[in-house]
Length: 482
Image (cartoon, rainbow, N blue to C red; front, side, top):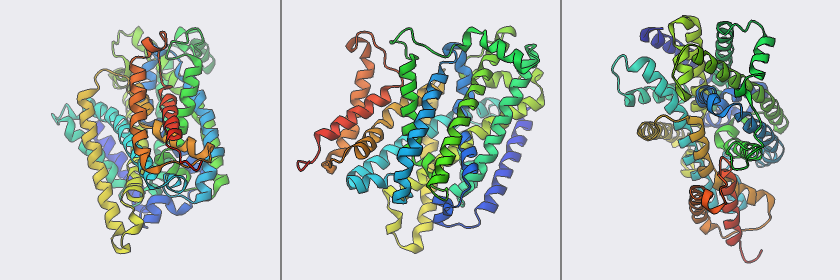
């Protein structure tokens, strides 16, 4: 595909999203923007959450990492599944019982205002970093495929990327996203299936059974790693990390929970979460199979692209065909934007509800303030993504994303765990100090783990360590009356 064809395809795609926004955003109210009037069908939420959970990072990085890490990522995915069960039957009942718009309001009721603000700020930092990683990846691909050919700087690419999201979310917010995520998830899954079909034919795998046998017999399809506890992919480490990544990055994340809180009641929200978690396992298996086939195709055709460059490079080859390339682009854009648009909306929600306390402002100014916050968050994302371009070179972004999550979500994990599993009160005004010290201690331990822990190498479980440090810190500042 030429750069002009790609540009026209993207424009057509966004015209569809803007049309959806027009029809779903007619009610330009805060209730619709923040909670979709609590009327979203659970099955639409569940299907749309697949795309939001996977994002452009999974779309590009998981297939690209298969050559180096085999199917080890599936161990993390199994952990995801059990993490979603914890969310469905531990966290969602709390959120629905308290009728929350922002889930961090729970911390205010449980501990006090400083804990509440600390939790909200931890989320804002975590989600800005996470959303920036996801958008950084798709902006890099768009830069390579389109904007470099028009000599447009990367900064302008990022501004255009964020502006397009703002354009279709600034009125309807989460109500619009419920529907756009559904469409985007559909495009993403079609893209994966179309690419797998092409690669299978190119590799002379003419049936599902042949694909299965080829994958099963390939050394890259190794799933479980039990032989070396020092290996970052060791099963128990990966499984527990996946479980706690899900609990924090979904269950303690305003972005993902905001979608669940749009369901009519707790029962429907739980149906959404459980059904979504089952489907997500199979979708991730599809991405790993895709990665294996991409690697085999690259090896046979002398393609040297690795990691995050592998899928885009092969998908845009002339012999792939215009249709397959078009579906790749639609899938990539859909995966990236289905995560990023909800991130922008949830960041706006948390900033409005938790930080500036929008409900306390005059009714006449609330909508205007919300829109100003939406623009501010968009500008912050642009700045962070441009910074990432100078920091992260030749890396698999999904692994960097999980590393960052280990440090930014740890305080949230510790705070919510302490609140749910103990009855103790704490000296609220010291909480922010604990939330700073815990990630620093985690970083130091991670840096020197080989020396301090007899050769043990910490992987994704740094998130659990960070949460434990936060939990222990909260014990130290518990109130004397406890």
